[in-house]
Image (cartoon, rainbow, N blue to C red; front, side):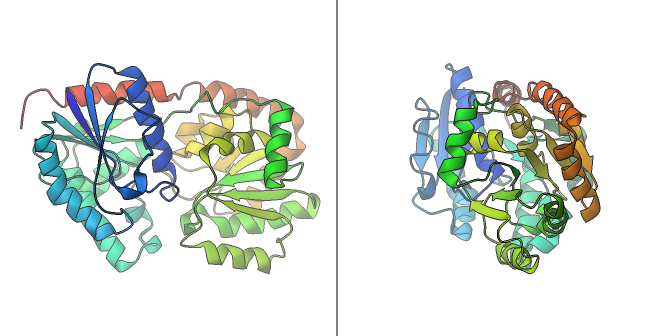
Amino acid sequence: MRIGINALYLIPGHVGGTEIHIRNLVKGLSDLDDKNEYFIFINKESQGFFDEIAPRMKVVCSPFRASHRPVRILWEQFILPLQVIYHRLDVLFSTGNTAPFLCPVRSVLTLHDLQHENYPENFSRLQLFFLKTIIRVSAKRAKRILTLSEKVRSDIIKHYKVPEDRISIVYHGVNNEAFYRRERADKEKIKEKYSLPERFVLYLASSLPHKNYMRLLIAFKEVVAEYPDLCLVLIGTREYGSPEIVKKIAELNLEENVIMLGWLPYEDIPLIYSASSLLVFPSLHEGFGLPVIEAMASGVPVVCSDIEPLIEIAGGAAELVDPFSEEAIALGIKKVLQDSELRSILIQKGLKRAQDFTWEKTAMKTLSLLYENTAGHN
């Protein structure tokens, strides 16, 4: 079978969890499958990204930058189908929410979430028009949709009226070679590299408003009143919404207690997880919530929102809080910091829960669905 992977959307360092997904999924497919031929379609920003991850796969680089979104969309809609024909593909697997409307082979699409439907205020009118149009049509035209949780599946059914039997849930995984309990020496080394304090609370997220930074910072101000040496370390892309975060930190006089590291090299992130006292994840909207599982695999207790899909993903192994309440977020953080027995329980439950999520499982189920969708022809 000749399988195409549409990664034209990928801009390393700028697309958050979808980068982690494509990196680990492609590696998982490469490790698992030596029978089929793979063609990965990328843009200029992604040159070299897959060279070590999947050296056996053929990379087809397009002559544009994905940051020029109109060009990327036009290429995906009109040129990619011709490339599919040229390379005699059997199936096209689009991994970033959009796909060619007129695909000459069976189209399989991953929809990570429907943020634009649930939080339209995060987007400009032009962005919203684009997303609502192209994602809706991509979903309607795909023969199979892969998504990350029951929450996103129900959103797709609600907003796009896609039949339930065309939607399959394929969970993210955890890279167990990177995320595991570390020795003290490893923790001290990463703290020294980034000048991190002895104890800190970690949050990994983009700067978008639905990540709930305003309430988190107000809550952390309350925590700092009891733990004046405690820091909040923020990792993730700092674009839309970032100035408001910086302003709020200053307004609350938290400059000495909040460290903004931005987007870090992938290899450093597991070490920072392990060095943290806990992960706080008070997001208002998620498709999956990968940091929750990564923290658990690292032996770190988790305080997260009591929303779907985080309830589904955490599986009873996290301290759940109301993300709309600053008091609840603060109480959850203080509770895990203060109660050593609770910390131990959460760590042990988290380590066990994380074992349910592997990229090998993700790759196996994905490959099975790609085979299913090459049965017969359009």
